[in-house]
Length: 79
Image (cartoon, rainbow, N blue to C red; front, top):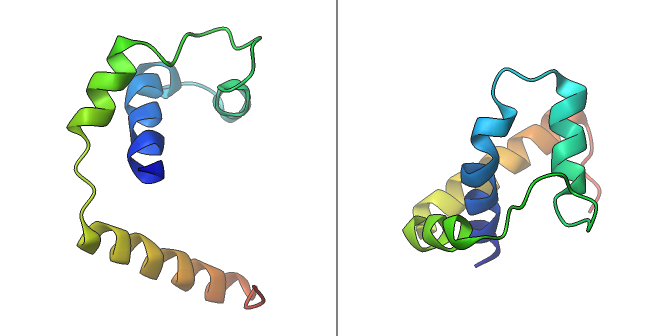
């Protein structure tokens, strides 16, 4: 359920992220849960996006494998 919510957030904010400088993207993503967020994320559009997210076990395994690969590549093997 957490992955579906994260994907839905990205779907909703995608138009706000495209063609923006890195600092604006990070500012938006870090303020999403804040009451001072300039954009309303958790609307009906969010519920529709979350309902439409298909998160399969194979997708989760792929994400986990990619995470482990990036972790090894960065040299951070500690939990």
